[in-house]
Image: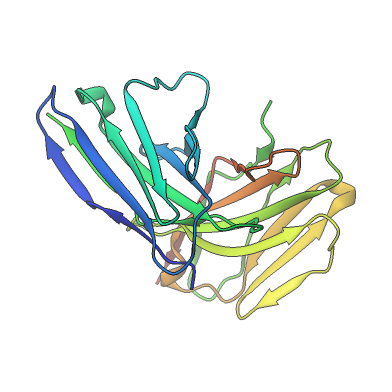
Length: 115
Length: 116
């Protein structure tokens, strides 16, 4: 149980394009989903928290217009990196937790490379 | 201020050796949760354990064991008889009860390399 999938696992795009990453909870209803960014050899940095049906809450320093988050259903959240630039290249990981659950379960991550 | 400190950046051991990963946390809450996650080279974070602040009982799961000591604000993790497959980055994390969304504060991680 508690499986989270992420798609795509890897994406290469040209500078200026937008990229959408999907995060799905496969066997539970995720009332809250989280989006993280991880640079090589560093820890995870929380970007935003999204609750189903509500606007996402962004951490300080994260551009809302740059990283659009939608949590339209209890099993799906999407992160769209708009007008991507090389500095947006990173490993993006989502996690999800169900109602009354303290544990976050993580997806396999998406490696984004912007050329 | 850093809430979770993993002072060991890298640990290298030979197979079958035991390895202990240190984790020290900081919180003013009386209710909180502590976690350990494993991140193998593939990148996915694997949940290992959750401990709540009211349960100081140590736990053993196979070759893994955890020592939770509130008096020293530590939640250390030991891998007994390490294997090559244990090579990964291990993260300790804290979730505080005031955070309704159970946000996690991660430590910097400890990279464990087990040599055959």
